Length: 284
Image 1: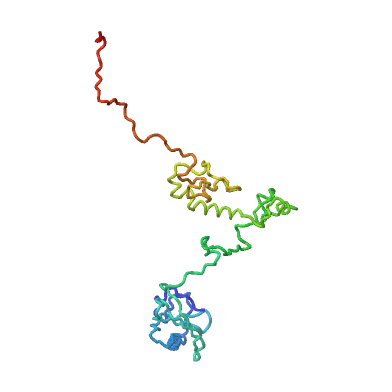
Image 2: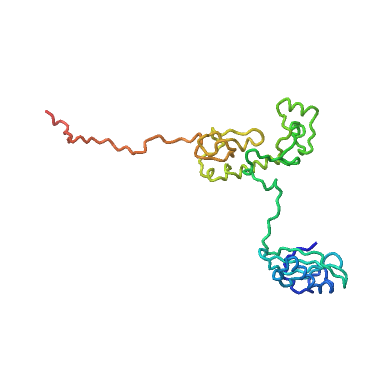
């Protein structure tokens, strides 16, 4: 296997063995540079201009094998290197493989991410299927949470009592799996950090929180204390899961001042008639 170049430009001397961790290169393999260059040119469709100067020669982990590195002047491969591995005893050296390897400044594709980690909620469209893995840590068997005697045990060690599953099915709890503690905590963190959590701009500007709003519908279960659904059709949060400390301008207890916004002046008589007050006792 050809080793990845961490810093190929640091080993321009083909006999550089300053690093004691590197495998020493046999003299007959180090002298096979011309053979390695010819092989690189052949791989480059015979274009010698694509094979640049020697960058390094490094020994492999197997006996009688070394790799010659050449700068690649190939269009679209800036910072890449031709790696030509030669192997064989003295007098019988042959080319083993020729590959292009990226250097530390090369433009390469990002690391592959499994689809179940790459997919986002907005990627799911009508008719699409998003299967859940059998060992998804967000889910546990439904019957595992029906036995109150085992609440202190880890969820993967809970053993249901006789007939527990049958009783659950009879009560309408026939779901094969329900959310585990990890799944609920994951949802709680996601909702808290979302657009309807306590840190949202709307919540910070609100004068009251959802927990005291008449339109707030608390969810059931262990998340009841912190989350509910907004039922106010006049606000953006309607139909969404909101945190109890979220808030907006549509709180049910907000009161609007219905008084007049125009200042009322003192009553003034202005009918054009001057009314002089007569002194007391002036009438006959």
